[in-house]
Image 1 (cartoon, rainbow, N blue to C red):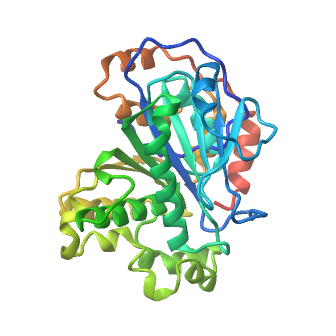
Image 2 (tube, helix red, strand yellow):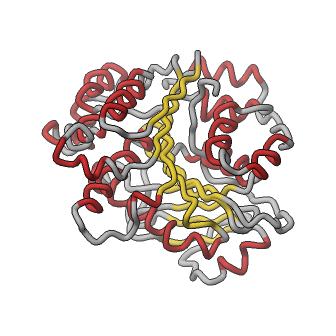
Image 3 (cartoon, helix red, strand yellow):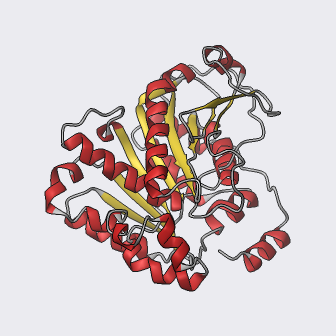
Length: 361
């Protein structure tokens, strides 16, 4: 499989209506978007919406949920999930595979529009951002969002036994922390609202998994050390929030054994989070017995995979790689994927090249 990076999508402006599918096998994917510092803050830290983009077939199921507030979005229902978790479902048919994604919101929309055409539901999870919350809050919010998906996705036509978790950039880090924390609880016999063993696979795109090694690098890239440490609850907490370090603790080997298959995607020209971050994490996971794969995209930067490439149209290698993994054991789905229509270009190439040159990431 070609080297590529997977990135989550933002809110989809609309969802296209589609006829019902005779397929009884579909996958739900939840992608969680996480950023260390957002370009903008939420006006109310307690009001993170649950936004569902509906098709005609999903309307009946969605009607069972009581909307708390509405936005001007085509066929959209807005709900609050806990205090600060935003979940976006993009659906076309019923009985889908599910991908949960933590990612940049615009990419969540682009990704959702592509995967929904392949009978995959994309649920985009959000969480409190600094200074409204620190890492512990973010992990708690993400875990609550994953729990919501597991406990409610069937109402939206998704298969709760075919759920995948994906994170992009900081989202990859937070999703990994959430998985490990939940695995530790599960292995310790604690009562949990969702089980790590039910996650089919984890996809990490352009993530950083060892904060101890990255803190000085981030400082040099413009994320001031004092701000970074405030987000991470102090230097003494860096080890706790470093998945690469945590999984090496022999005391939690039972928890590590619960982790699903992990695929780490990264661009080799990524200077926001170097691809060595994924390589190093993969090497550690392999030594601990975790099933892991690394997919590198030659010459791709941090934003190429989730901004420029999806807008370029045509074949999106990262999305194709993601779909191949999800549908690997589904011959009918793979046959359908082979006949999928090419995506249209959204932005002229000149503007994409300009954006790549001026992007701080």
